[in-house]
Image (cartoon, rainbow, N blue to C red; front, side, top):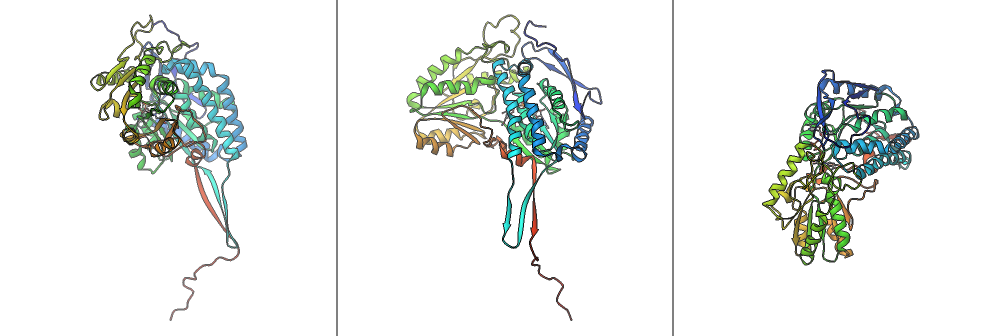
Length: 505
Ligand code: NAD
């Protein structure tokens, strides 16, 4: 085993959690889990198959039809959610250590993720208590109201980039609204998902409401998507996987929420605060190792400040601290898995033929003992990238950025919208009119002006074009996880055409 930090009491066997019990796969099948610094197997995880998903869905279905959870008052469920948030906050350090060990994310950034996970539970606890629906009066004729109901068993399928936080993003609204769930976490990073089981049990969530099935996407994930007793699938992951899920969910006409890939532009006009834009666009693509769906991975810079921007940006990128994810000084850690490392490294090589390499370009040099085998890529900056280049068009999901010059607003907009994706956009200008006009014309689900991605949990979250279908966030998540039944009450006599009432001869 390579010399590097290993958290205390690291589990070496990761199981499913079904109906309040940790269990292995019925078949006994497992898969190996690697840590991204040594690339050695540190645990085996239960590889869920159809029969394991069937058991989990049956438990969730029973908890939904017979158990108290869907019938509890919002305040009662909110109390449980707040206890969950308390427990996540109390375990912040442990959670961050496990998450960093499993994903390779820098420890300082993993800590932020644990707090965000707790906040997601608090936020939806508040929202379901405050939530109300309309009643509508037709004077003298009808009163109509909305009867909002949980839907049933929600299938939650999540990626590996910020596993625990993204799981919380789905678990919190699904549970808050009274649904029961089956979570299928990403196979690269199954470690932290098991922590939910104890957190939920201790907080008073009834058995069967939360179920966890580990496994490969094509096996466990596929079985969940095709299961007839799972009316909802909330998925976050790659666009190609999203298309497969969309096709497979069609047979049972499921409700789908799809948060998919991105290739988001950051547009820097020549009147922007250049230093702030440089800080923010460095953070925007190199935080979370560049494994961030909303990464500003294409930077478009107005011609007059282009060379100055490139020079300053590259100098800072070269100075970014790449290293042991557990070291608090580390700014970019190890990519999650050797397969993903190979993919990102391939794009770096492609980029060398498509742009002017200003920083990085492969493995960082002189990694210390114990780190030589890690999935490290030096923050890589390419300038003069043409819009038809693959590194301009395709999601790399690593610490690699493409910089392209533009002359005026029209060219900037054409370049910004020139991809199949439409998740986020970042606009840097001090001109108020341009800021609003430009932002509103961006084909992006979310836009930040003079900032990187800073979330307000009440706002819509999601992409357009190939970046997703549907928006979650705030009340939109409540809408996704509930049916809104319209109940109509007649006041007085109802006016009905009297079919068959006329005598026939
Ligand atoms: P992925 O699509 O490979 O896997 C995501 C999940 O889907 C995993 O749990 C996987 O096991 C499962 N899966 C795979 N094939 C499946 C199938 N046929 N049926 C059912 N489930 C299946 O994505 P990833 O590599 O884990 O994550 C990276 C991607 O996620 C990037 O494209 C990134 O942009 C995207 N992402 C998007 C957002 C967002 O909110 N838009 C957030 C984070 C990540």
